View 1 (cartoon, rainbow, N blue to C red):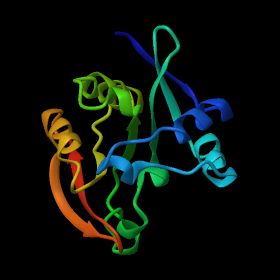
View 2: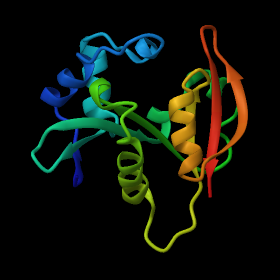
View 3: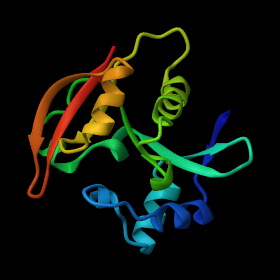
Length: 156
């Protein structure tokens, strides 16, 4: 399967916001609001599609990929490229993550540059943590928000 990315549009954002995940992954469920649409369209989100143009997921980088609780305790002070990813719920847990995340890393890595990538993942999301570890990410720290615990992972 060949993947490509393109800038998030309003139509794609509405599609993403309509996704429903089974528990415990329903933590990632978003409501369709103008604010949510605006964030996806205006805050640097990219849609990831297959060769047929089917929406498979999305990614973001920078501040959009950070968890507010992490900013509050200063876990994002060291330079790194923060990454946030989301995959269509029908495609999760079926071996698609490695290809998907590899595309994201390749697109975000500056040419001829050593870079550190940083992910913040919900601690309960063992499936994603295994994927990230398989692609070379290592657990660096943990943070707590009012509702969830998160793991900060780095890849050099």
